[in-house]
Length: 177
Image 1 (cartoon, one colour):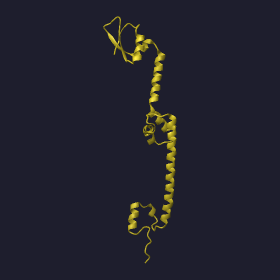
Image 2 (image 1 turned 60 degrees about the vertical axis):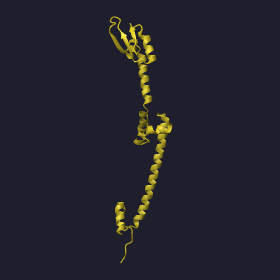
Image 3 (image 1 turned 135 degrees about the vertical axis):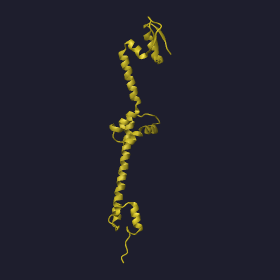
Image 4 (image 1 turned 90 degrees about the vertical axis):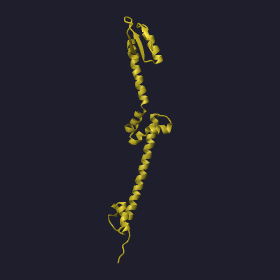
């Protein structure tokens, strides 16, 4: 919706009204040439009003709004370099994680930090379990390799081992005739 103005005396109250109604444009009509009308954005009217500080404050508010809205950037920064606890795929799943745990699209930094710590401990436990498993496997494989007749039996692939067992070359005592 547009408003027709005659002269600049009515601009300032209209700007206030525009800000209240959140309209984008106003039509200005020049007194000397009333046949020519220009569409002027509200920002230009603010310039006419000469409120440099107001514009600066508005820009600052806009920046703050963007900062608050960029949860992706926050989580990425958190999981990427601020707290190097979690791997890249966990950063990608950050949004799903927040959604799953809170049912909302955002979470506080302290909450995210706590989650990343939990996740780090969980990963460390998994790694430790894997190490133990591999250690056990190494011990058992070295024990089993003692009874094999072929010295390179441990380095064969599973298929090759099965093949050799079928032919009686591996792990079976040979007849001494």
